[in-house]
Image 1 (cartoon, rainbow, N blue to C red):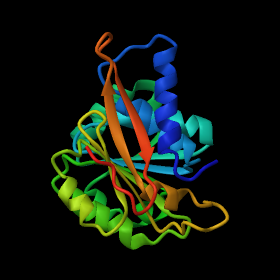
Image 2 (cartoon, rainbow, N blue to C red):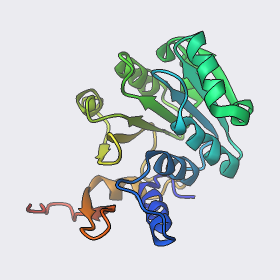
Image 3 (cartoon, rainbow, N blue to C red):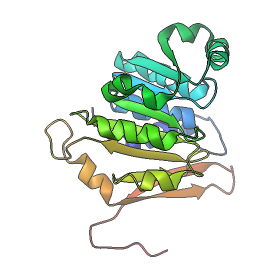
Length: 221
């Protein structure tokens, strides 16, 4: 499978609209699940600001497709209990860890897909911990609730995309070699692109598209 599947995730969402499902904005959980599955993620880690929610379920769904595993890091035991209540039977498919996510270096360095709630005060430290891990095959990192924290992501020195989905998704990758046989040239192609949101005035549906821009050219607004 392609290593960077943001475009495939967008297509997967649009397909749900074609089948009659309507929404005012692209579902964050659906996008995350499609992105993780499209990257064939084997170890998926989510760092939650509170209890687990639909984003954790999204990774469980992706794990069913990839045969992978999901680790959920919550800040305390109250959040752990609430997480299990929310996930129900799906909680048996999640390995929970309690504490500060940035201190779980071993699991973060082994993950190939990391999901971070940007409402965490220390989300920047978690991002740095993932970046310093240097996983050879690379790690896809997604921050949700990202509109309020994009500065810390854009300063990490990696190519990062801010997607206008939900309350904002920051998508980046650390450690991947763009020209490696496994990843092909997808990373280099992603670098020259922009995301555009179009609203259907009749249905109110939002459609998100990625437009590739030839290097050296600028799209005028």
